Each structure stands twice: as structure tokens, then as C-alpha cells.
Image (cartoon, rainbow, N blue to C red; front, side, top):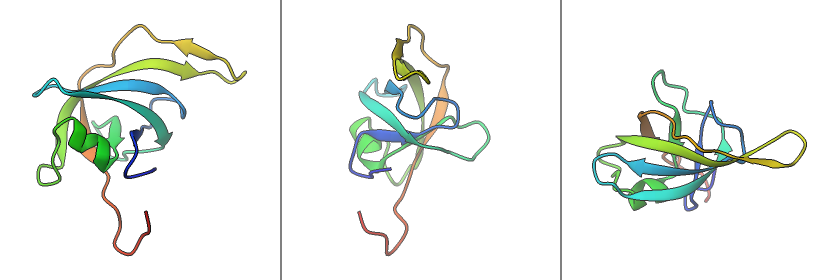
Length: 104
């Protein structure tokens, strides 16, 4: 996952899914693409890149926030995409931090 890009990790959404993630407290939102698997913590369905988290007002200090995730397009096995018409329920987003010594 690119820490400077608008992407996220999810165990429930297919890789390549485009979605709108909205901070419930601030109303700020961003478009993301699911590029990785995670988070591996019960009750959390999305892990945002640091760049996306900042855009929607989730700070490093706080680390997590309540968001809604509304899929926009979902890739299908045959290479086509399906347009989604429903938001996922409230979830907790975590900022994925870079590990020390890892390149961008």
C-alpha cells in the first residue's frame, strides 16, 4: 500500500474496489482504492493510508476514527466491474504507519 496515495486495506472488500470513505465526526471524505488486506483487528474493516487519513481528519496522534465506507465500483472475476449502490455500516479506520527503515 502506498502511504502517500489514496488507498486502503480491507479484509471484506475485494482488491481493486473503489470506495468513498467519510469521517463521521467531520464529514470529510476521500475516494480510495482497496490495494491490500487488513486490518487484522476485530471490529475494523478498513485501514487507511496516512495520506488519506489526514485528508479526512484522522490524525496520527489519534490513530483511529469512525468512518463510513461506501463502495462505488467493485471488480468482478471476469474483469468487469459492478457499480455499488449501498454504504457499509460504521467502522473503525486505523492509520497504517510505515515501519522504521522502510522506503516509500
